[in-house]
Length: 79
Image (cartoon, rainbow, N blue to C red; front, top):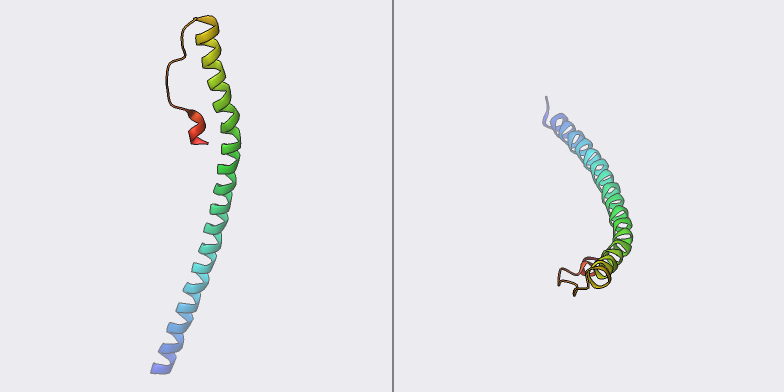
């Protein structure tokens, strides 16, 4: 084969590789967007969960057990 033909074949391979990589990038961008949406949904879910857990501890300890609520991790910090 001539050098020109080999160069054309190499350029074609590189173009094909670029096309595959562009497709992969698009798929990964879609996955990142999906994960960001899932994280946002999870954060919206966690806020009422953290508040209700805090309220439950308060009711159980102060109202039922007549004891102070033990110190623990504030779940609202994770929202």
